[in-house]
Length: 387
Ligand SMILES: *[C@@H]1O[C@H](CO)[C@@H](O)[C@H](O)[C@H]1NC(C)=O
Ligand SMILES: *[C@@H]1O[C@H](CO)[C@@H](O)[C@H](O)[C@H]1NC(C)=O
Ligand SMILES: *[C@@H]1O[C@H](CO)[C@@H](O)[C@H](O)[C@H]1NC(C)=O
Ligand SMILES: *[C@@H]1O[C@H](CO)[C@@H](O)[C@H](O)[C@H]1NC(C)=O
Image 1 (cartoon, rainbow, N blue to C red):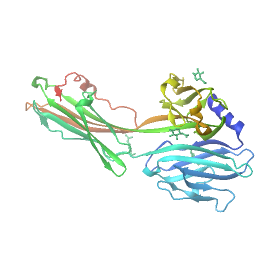
Image 2: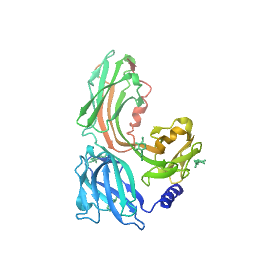
Image 3: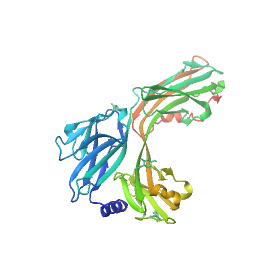
Image 4: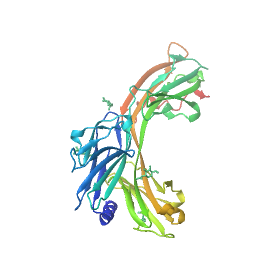
């Protein structure tokens, strides 16, 4: 909180017009409507314009002194609801996979200052698979020496599902599994993963073998903040969101030979993101980073922290400017499904028989599907050798 307050204090010191917050959802399901909200404080200035860009291409502008005040420009994936959009908001009535991108809000004050403030945020769109994963190639029964050769097939999604095989609840080592070429369908990707093993010893057949394929879809997204120093003067060019990473410890100007000592922090997160520092768009190497433990608060939230230290040399002020950027990358599980099969005893024949096959699906849930307790006793009696 103090960090945030300090950052806002700095901007207030330097500027009249202040961009307070840019709210763009980080991850949305394709089809969902979206609000893009940009709030600012004009202080004593008059508003000249609010402009919105996606990947640096303008799609909406609002000029309060013109008639009509609002203009929109056609852009793939940007479906503006003009009625519900205005000075502080743009409403997108729907989204699709083309809606993904970096959204920027740019606010300019009237003459004489013509001061401009901007902020940007990344929006990712995902599409869930239409069907549950399936196991292909499983037979009704197996005899000793038979090869079990099954493939787990996930229906197309974006991003692609990550598949894993488990035998009696233990993840099978990578060499038992073979990834097959994914199916691509328009902008969607279907994953396939094969599992192959030989049914070995007869006397161990009495125990059912449980095989499971899990399909997990993880959406990554980032938030970042960048501080720009031009000819030794700090000039914050792009504001991050209020709930994005914050930089602290920076001085307002630097000269050659000065030491930069800064922290990037992201308070109040449930699962901490990966933090990275970039100097002039180049990722900073570990010897210039200070890794700190994640701080846990009483309310269950955590704070991620990453320090940066280096001494400014000529190369840091290339073209008279230095950019310090901290990026936080989050991973969000958006879909998790299992498909199970139990190869068990067959009373009538001497082979192994498929005794159960079922599919479980959960959306966006972090809870793993748990095996019924009765199967757990069979964990150590795998009757297989692996190729
Ligand atoms: C954005 O503004 C709209 C309109 O006022 C509001 O309904 C919506 O909740 C706001 N979104 C966020 C994330 O604050
Ligand atoms: C920070 O750097 C990353 C990686 O180069 C870039 O993707 C991101 O847009 C930068 N953030 C800002 C606010 O410029
Ligand atoms: C960064 O955070 C650590 C841990 O809280 C603190 O010891 C250090 O002084 C901070 N550095 C700066 C430059 O603020
Ligand atoms: C999964 O999502 C679908 C559609 O989004 C919904 O109808 C269904 O109830 C959800 N299932 C669970 C287990 O949340």
